[in-house]
Every structure is written in C-alpha cells, then in structure tokens.
Length: 401
Image (cartoon, rainbow, N blue to C red):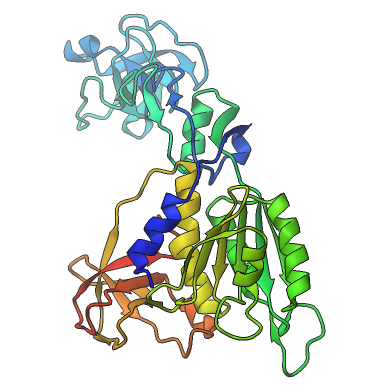
C-alpha cells in the first residue's frame, strides 16, 4: 500500500491543468483567478477627506485664526472646490479635498454661528490630519491580485474597483458524483428497515460547491455489474472528473474497480495505509478523466474527498498552494495500527494564543453525525502509536482558509 504522502503525490502527478474561461464578476466568487488584476487608478484617486467637518488652510490657522466664514459645502462626489483665503468649506466624509485646503476639523469640534465655524479652544489642530492622500493605498497600474488566488468577496471589491465586469478564471470542470449500493435510498423516498439514507453524494456535492466547483451532478447506481458498466461509461463520456463512493473494498458486490478497468480506466493506486479510508482507489480514464473511488463509509468518504479530491482540483485550477497548518493536540491520543490516522478534531484556543485540536471520537467510520462538531482532522504519523497532549500535528480543515 502507498503511504498517504505517496498517494497524494500520485494524485497530483496525474492531475492535468484545467483551461481558462471568462466569467462575469458576479459569478467569480470561489473561482481561481487566471489573470493579473491591475489598478485602474491610484487609490484613493484624489486626496480624500476622512471626516465630516470643515476644511481650511493650515496657514490661516497657524497665523492665529480660529473662526472661519463658511464659503460653501462640498459633499462626496462633488467636484473639488477652490478654497478662498481665510475661509472654510463644510466637507463630508469621502469628498475630495478642496484646492488650497490642508486641514480638517471634525464637525463635533466646531460650532457654527452666523455662518462662521469656530473651532473649540482646546482642540489640537494638525496639518493634513484626516486626509487620505492620493495614491497612498496603491498606484495606478499596481498588481492587486495575481493568478492562483481563489476569489473571495473581498477580492470582488478589488476587481470591481478596477472597473472590470468580467474576469479570467480556471474553468469549472464537468464532474459526476456517483453513489453505489443497493442499500441506499435518497431523502424523500420511502425506506425499508434494512436500507439506509443516501448521504455521501449530497455531502461530496456540498464540499465541492464550498470550494467553488458547481458543475457536478449526482447519480445513484445499484450494485449491478451491467448497470455500473453502462452508467459509468456514459459518465466517462460526459465528465472530466468522476467521484464514486462505495464498491471499492473486497466484498463480492464491490464491482467498481473491475468495471472501471473494463472501461479502460487505468489504476494508479488502490488502498492507502490510512484509517479511515484505507480502500481508497484512484485512476485515470482513457480520455484523461480523473476517477476517484472513495470508500462507502461516510467518514472515510469525506476524509478521502478532502484529502485527495480537493487538492487535485486545486492544482488543476492553478490555485496557489497554501502552507501547511499545524495545531497542538488538546488531549492524549493512542492509535496502535501501523497506519496514518486521520483523527477528526474540534479547534479551540488557549490563553497563549495556540490553536488546539480536540479529538472528537467517532463510533465507527460510519458515524458521520459526529463530524458536524468538528472543524477538520489531524494527521497522526503511522510510525507512532502514542501522541501526548501538546504534540504538534498537521491540521486539515474541512474548508481550507
């Protein structure tokens, strides 16, 4: 069996690069950027006033003037006025600094009587205070976002500020999420005592969507070798990525590896020295399709999806690689098998500012209900069996930051 590191390397080594497409900015959140976003203008594009109040010349104040006749009022979005000597302009937050003005006093520190603004006697006036200088955030043409960035709502603000209505991103691949098993019944359908609800498929679809991949459809195929052959053949023709769950262990009805081989899908590996998820299977289709066959147990399926599928899609999209994240175990963990343990955890912090990983016990690899209380899982090395509290470990969040 491959180690978990060898398995991930094999997946990434077989991963192609998705093409580029152009989408409306409103549809770009969660997608991986494929272009440089350059500043359309300097920011701010003018000397920007940061407080409601009055604008006047420092030289007038420095010469002893404390009361300023109001020349005019200038709101945000108004063209900049030219200030006359010895006067002030009532100014609003976000407005352009009037010509000849270089002092702002907040409205709370002035009194206006007979159209003249008087500054409080104990207020300390400073030249250029409350002025956001032109270009102090960034200059025109500056590279604000670079390829590989997964676009967040904050990035949308940057893209819109640069005047762009469309943006180049990695293509969203066509995917199929396929649940296998006679025992599975979808939510909303009548169910017998010996059957279980289908949950892996919806959970995997949801994880894909949280990472910005929306072109995935779900199918449920019974454990019938002919049905599997026909439906998987159709899915291989239609999709670039297939993600199956179930049918990859050693049971007599675990037909998935055989059917995939019959359809020309080359096995890259089958089984990884890990728990949960040891039966994990990965291969490549005759047309270059990526085929992931996850174990059917829910905890195993979700761990393997996060551990292998998501990094593969990120690489194919050209996403910038994120640095590894660590946490300290919050309690002792003992794990005897010579396997890598992916232990679900809930994250907490201590007074020293450390991120602590509190192990959350799952009853079995079918106990998906326990995962709702977790933030991810930690990776416990197969060479060890005892992990004392405080041990630093690799942290894998369900939804990476």
